[in-house]
Image (cartoon, rainbow, N blue to C red):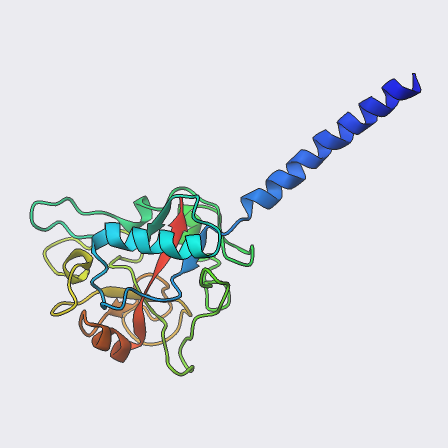
Amino acid sequence: MKTSAMLVLLSGLGACAMPARGGMESSRMSFFITSAGTGRGADLGGVAGADAHCRSLAEAVGEGNRTWHAYLSTSATGGQTAMHARDRIGSGPWYNAKGGRVAMNVADLHGATTGLGKTTSLTERGDVVNGRGDTPNRHDILTGSQLDGTAFPGSADKTCSNWTSSGEGSAQVGHHDRQGGGENPTSWGSAHGSRGCSQANLIATGGNGLFYCFAM
């Protein structure tokens, strides 16, 4: 009888422990700002190249066994259909490298209560990215997106030729620290356009060719 009772007790404890492990699993890193860009300005090798860069950085910190997508929109040019950044990142929730939740879902991510900001929008290594007031300022994050995470309509190039140009053009950027200048200075995803598409121009504007990565 005592043996049977002990087995039942241990079985119950095991069942109780499983949700706790599941909770820890869910707070694995699923969002980060790239610690480095490609070095080619806004030429990321297209969206596919940007996704590969996200995956490579995630692999370096032991999180490569997930599907990683860059938060980037593309425009409808050359017969291609526009792609919206918000449609590329899954449904959430998303956590930074320290296990802090930054958003529950897509609506939360783009809403007034989003958890994104300088101290929470960390790199894959868990580092804070320089913002306004730091030297050098690196707060311009490539997105090519409007405030709601959708692509810009019309023919205006807001994506440096869909992330294949390091010359002429412009890319819409957000401010990860949610401060600065531009039309929407406090927006993490759509603050203003870059001065150009080259690495030098991105740096001069206040960035470094960095972008957001999300796990699906």
